[in-house]
Image 1 (spheres, rainbow, N blue to C red):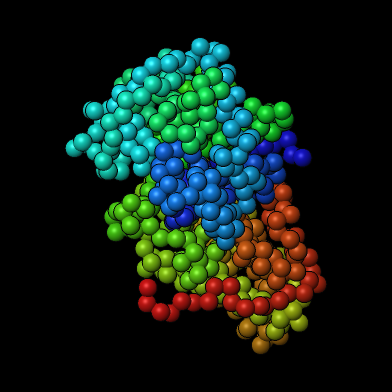
Image 2: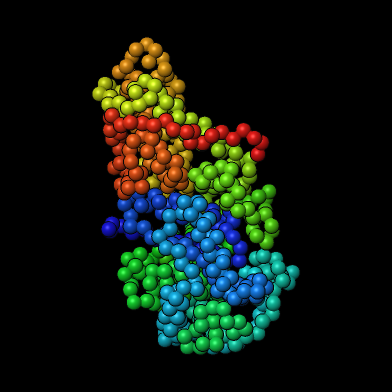
Length: 515
């Protein structure tokens, strides 16, 4: 087991509908960095799951004539199926209805109760059931939820409260000593402003329904769904259970990935809760932007949310993953469209990458009887040196980009090598060398390009795992997922000679119909 650990989480998704492009976006991004960190020798824990409690779920189950547990049990497999379709390599999938989660939540509340951070009181105010969120009178916009724009309910309840107000200065001190906690930087300023504006104690229980985790010291109270959900990041590691080994090994998380609309919960309430319990906050919370279609946020309530399956059916899994991580700057809002997806597919994938692999393996079959040649021993030409330079720069550029979750720049670095491969083939013209009988130079050119393609496949694997695995198989190289030191494996000159290559079908057949 590696001594380097990496723990990344998605938010746990609410089971009120099937996965859409927004939830898939976060999950694919987390998967790509998890896959890359496995290739850099880290012991990775990648967590995702489902948020299954709360008033909204109880209401939805009742409206459908079902018990809440039966309702969530019917929806959970749809998420698992979607993540399987998208190649999500999670290590754990937590559901908040699981006994391990309930046990951890109750252990957490016992800890805070014993430490004096909880008290009983009355709550009066506004509540948005669809968002399961409390709002003050001042925060409402035209009397409606400022987040989703829907009607709110005035509620009056006997609740338990968390002394969030006591953590204003500790949080500000924490942000100052951990400047990378809130990412990207634009979100950090937003969080600082919110906390400096003053914090109010937080209601952490509900009494007007029973679908949730009961407070261990007040069984007639169930945990407020947001607080219940936040704790999944540690209950999945065994917090509150008998076996603490995963918690000791992986916590604090390297990244909690969230959408920017839930930053207040993750960057203010979550670290304050952990501080109160004597637990270290995560190293970073990365809040990405929204996917926009025609200038509007994609959401279920707006009716413009699509399912990943419809796009995967048309473009394939790897093209789907590539598009969202290449075309949308992670951390910012990004506009997506079918037109731009077709353009990326045909330009980057069909033309640049797929065509390169096809013609290269075809020439290897045609000119070298389908066997990889011996590495050249002659002095490299300027074109050879350029190709090797692109390959040599790639590991450092890729690592720098991925360490700041800049997927677009990471892929661009890989594409710099892919594009130079295409230039190299055009300029060196193996077909001419074959015609002229220059077998030594022909073998050298094909070896160099095959070696560059081998390296390019390594660095496209975190985002396009199926295609990279297929390229390695066609090169006769075996299982790319066994790579745990990508830098060492991508050093130039490791392609063995005499391997049987296979041309195979086109990796990305061109899409000709109109978008």
